[in-house]
Image (cartoon, rainbow, N blue to C red):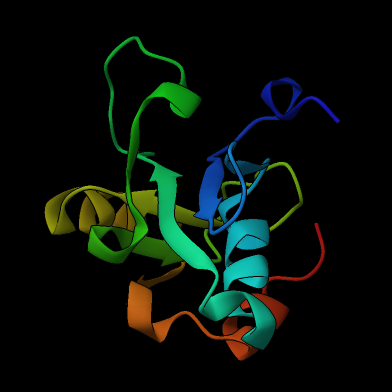
Length: 122
């Protein structure tokens, strides 16, 4: 799979013992990986695309630390794998996006498997 062929925000994780980051075509898939009990202690860094960055730069080049991002879960904007969780660098950006596209605003610590399961489907 070539992740750049898919629309929407991307994620990448740096894992202990791996030279290259693991790359995901959706932030949702990155969270599914990082939330697995066997991966929690292996994950060194988790980066996500800044969906709110309006500069003329591809999403995969606008990465920010997932722990500092503000997320919209379940908006009307679909990602590579259907319903999505979209990261933003600022609270103002995610609030403006949510007002226009719906969904729920969550922070990193609020993203759990139950939330990700609610995003199933297209």
